[in-house]
Amino acid sequence: MADLKNTFRQLLPKKIKGLKFGLNQISSAESSDQAEESIRRILHSLKNTASSFGYEKIGTEADRIDELSGEDFYRGVENFITTVNSMLDLNQKKNKKNILIIDDDELTIELINSILPKSEYNIIQVENKLRAQTELLENDISLIIMDIILPDIDGRDVLAELKSQPNTMPIPIIILSDEDIGRIREECLALGAEKFITKPFDINDLVDLVESTSLDEPAIQIVTNLLSKKKLIKKFNSLQRQNSDIDPYTLTLLDIDNLNEIEEKFAQKEINKILNEFNQFIQEEIIIEKYYCHWYGEEYLLFFPDIKEKEAMQIISDFYQYVRDNPIELDKNTAIETTFSAGSKQFQYATDIQDAYFKVSEILNQAREKGTGQILCSSKCREPEKKKIILAENDEITNSLITHRLERENYEVKFVTEGKEVLNLLQDDPSYSMIIINIKLQEMSGFEIIEKLKNKEATQDIPIIILTSMGKEHDIIHGLETGADDYIVKPFSPRELVARVQRLSRRKN
Image (cartoon, rainbow, N blue to C red):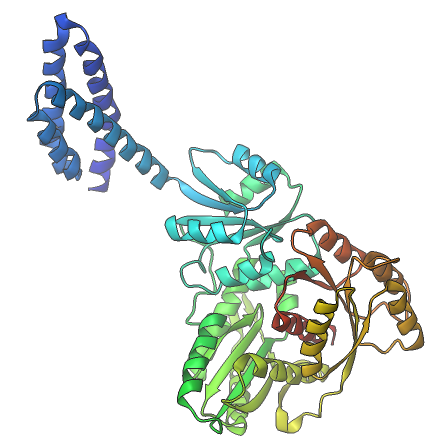
């Protein structure tokens, strides 16, 4: 049937051309009768054959118009031509692959539009997350090409959300960036991006990349029964309403140990296969009522309802041994051994799961300090040390927001408003564990401070997070090039800031 429909569709333009010619001839009084006879002959042909080729509506409409006369007949033919032409155009678009570009850079969009053949690809361009969501609902998207920093949101957040939703998870995503910042590239690939390319890019390279990305059958994606972060929180909230404040639950945070080494050796397709296998291990081996998700790129959060810490630890220890005993096979000749580190803690339902995450994350940080393959629970870890953070920020509201949230998570925050104060503090005491700095400071910019700190042996290893406003992509790139380790875009979630502080601490261990 598909071949017959294609054959008929190829004949339709000729039929339409004949109808148009007939309408033009009707304007001549001498040939109007002959022209109408020709038009009706074409309509009879369509009426008798369209249904058998799978185009019932065309056949029915041709039959209806053939019953008309006079001006109604001619208007009916004109409408019929418009309808069929629209259908042909729609079918042509359906045969094309839809590529969604999320970028507010007009030059980039114009370039991509010019180099991808219009006969094969239908380019849909949007400049922000809100419009992208609309297009994803209304169109069947085969590929997404998106900037890492968007006017309304951090592109990493969009990437994480797309890769956590079942309907968008299989869509390959190519990330664009003004600079190839290794830390950001690694995070995007861990979150599920297919490729990470930098601007300006070679035209032929992008065409080859698009053509080599299977748009009919997307590369292996992380498509197991993982909940999205939002759905896990929703599940927890539902159970929280049903349970008393004294009922226990245990939260466990898993972090694959050697994922960075794997990312250096293999393409994203192989990385996704490894993550899929790891997900499958969790589903098959942790046979109890549980909910779990990717909280961040390489982190798994396991939520055990009505399970105490000791029982959860035994489950995770047994699972660790299973993972050690079962290398993941990429092909007949390649098997990857994976291990993980984990932190666990028991809570009551009065403690929100998002707040509990920070406590478990700190336990995982302590496990990481001991090396790889470490599993630690709250009953066996030490009381966390109060880590000192310098916050260089000249906005009092932002300062109050960050300070309050970090102090809740056992950080000691020293607040300053001028760049020189950062250098003075570190000269007196270089033991601060992190610096959060607004790049737009008085007298001395954040860029200058970062550069000075990275050039001194005593301070060069202190992690730095820069704060900047939405839409300041150049500032972010400059800050990362100067030596910053991560960035937060205002406005931001205080919880997101704490999560990034803890993850950066973990990476530095």
